Structures are given as C-alpha cells and as structure tokens.
Image 1 (cartoon, rainbow, N blue to C red):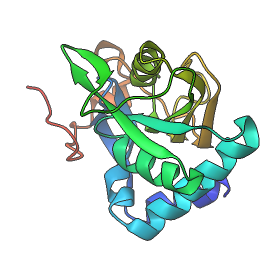
Image 2: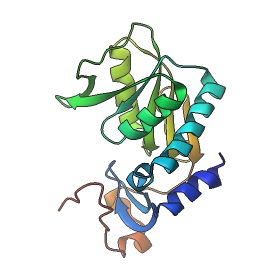
Image 3: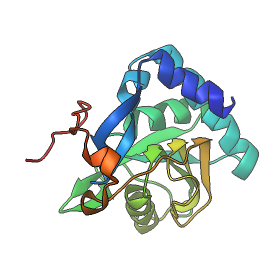
Length: 194
C-alpha cells in the first residue's frame, strides 16, 4: 500500500480535514486526520492494518504480541494483531502512567510490536513502550498508520509507518498569522478547552 493509497482511505472516509485544529498533543495544526471515521469502516480499517502487519513482518519479523495505548490505538492495534495472528493487548492510564491492566500480561522477553493510530510527537508511544518494558516485553518496533511528524518523532525504537507526512504543528503561542486567523474547529475527537 502506497502513501497515496493510505491518504485515499482517509479521503474516502471524509477523514482528511483542513482548517485549524488542536491535536491531542496540545499542538495546533492546519490538518486533522479523523482516524475514527476510517476505523468505523471495517473494510478500510482491515486494508490499512493488513498492510501495516505486512510491513511489520517485512521490516522486523514476526512479533509475539501487539500492544497499543488506550483508547486511540485499540482498534488499529487489534486489527493489526489479527493480521499478524498474535494476541492484541492494550495499556491504560492508572495514576497518570500507562500499565497493562484487566488481567493482561506478557511472557518475559516476549517480542512486542507497539501499534498506534497516528504519531505526532511520539510521547504516547514512548510512554506505551516504557510500560511494555516494565511488564517484561522486548519492544522490537513501534508501528502506526500515519506518522505526521515527517519522520522526526523519536519513539526510542524503529518506527514503522504506512504513511509519513510532514504536517506542521505549532505551540499555541507560536501560531503563524494565517492559522491564528482561523477559528479553532472541534474535530469531534476531544473536548476543546476553554
């Protein structure tokens, strides 16, 4: 699957949006990828995650388990795990830190691929990877549908992305005038502050 194929899946679900958005990282961007509209369509989600699973195997080999951060990574993590034919687990925040909960556990030394939806800064990926290591897993790679950092996000392990975009993202006090002039749009995935 090419990068254009990935973007066409987003376009086909009306999930590639332009305007002024606040990302979950708190950064502002003129582009928003509403991945939940893509994941809501099983055929689209399956095509993307099957391609991601193939890319994982081609680049790092077969993992033992796929682990994702809740909530955004659960659907692509599960679907990618299905195509890898491995268990799909997820970490959740407890006391501000990601942890395996709900009876989930992994064998010490298990080869784990951490699967995300979209990477912007890599922060949630790094936090998820830390939790996997704390649980005894060996993280062989991180994987995502879209890396919107242009390849600059450092997650501490190889990052495998179906599409790598260089989408600008700005701190609130460093907005370019053309973006500052546009009212912030609520993409519907999180509550806007204030």
